[in-house]
Length: 527
Image 1 (cartoon, rainbow, N blue to C red):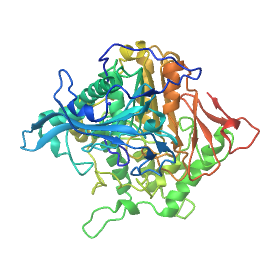
Image 2: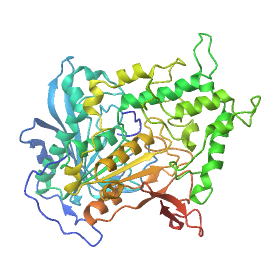
Image 3: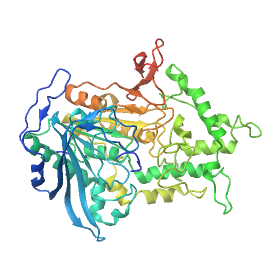
Image 4: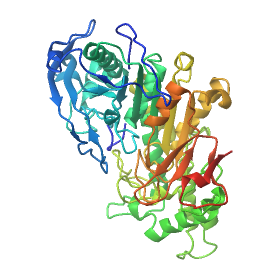
């Protein structure tokens, strides 16, 4: 739910028309000749209260600027953009509500449908381009029909929670809207092109990652391929986990004139650098090459307590109190019975980030802000976090996905190891439970893969991260050609010329021992 940078279900609505596959699994392009773009103004969806507000042909042109993105170099095809609403009404609070959506229908359609997930608390309709984990080429440029939604309320601010006062608006955000929009999207596609989409995909990160998981859990037959990035699972608990880290640091932070801890000064820049440098010294070369990246966070046994000074505090060590605060905070909160309430966070290179969303060693860049206390009652916080809203829209525990997997569904997770908002360990916890409940890791890897991205923050970013990768091609090849994604090549603007394979858990990237260490081809996936 806490994503700034980034912004959902389907049913068959007409007879299925098979499309021939080329040898590499690409669908034959199809011109949109069934109906003109303007004629979609009269579109109606049986069983759903849909009103099209605008239907406009957009000529071929450059990919428009995307917030928090470095941009895309290609050219979008001409397409028909349809903007509409579902269930327009006046809410309990007297405010106007509707489920807003926008769908882009390219003239050279490749027969595929993609739903693009939202971000934050939604509230606005993002451009329907399909830019989540898209590498250099958005889905629309590739010929996908793409749909987006505001999830049932309108807001100019990504974390405006006032809509929760209205029951239907809250339920729409939590799970209903994405299902309705997916159905409408498929019906518009069938109407416009004269046939159904051959394959349907959902891709999202943060809130969009949670929405992606909803598709596998609540609407298991709607999508063939789902990509869930840094899913905003049990947000109230991730907030709790963030506060736990900051509260732990507050215990060694200096106080202001009012006696409140100054969290940012719990550690100096030199202290943070010492932690990251020592972490790299301990674990960086475990993957065969010292490159400033830790590709096996699970196997990294670094203990920050080894940095505790034997005597007086110096620049080459942490005070015992500082080391204890870091270890305690990153281990995650436990209740009074010793039960882990939320997983800890891995120590990683992005923990000291100051740009973008600050790392956990620089707490404060979260919508919840840093706590102004050095005490925390985890039992009480857990009771508050475990509320009805969280339970209604959460995706953290439902692992019964046999309907999704048995109809051929494929599910990819990705998560930045340095994510300061949602712990990558929580996604790993879910994935391990998914494996445990569905026949074991070897069985689940037949239809689901998890990729951990070292150094990457929330959905992207990180001065020591390769955060540029394409998950569209792998999910399509897996769904349509049974080409299992063993690894995904990643690059990053902070490392020109460098590439690495991101390996699917439980494997990790390892240098083969010869060849250019900047080239992905000289690395392999090892257990």
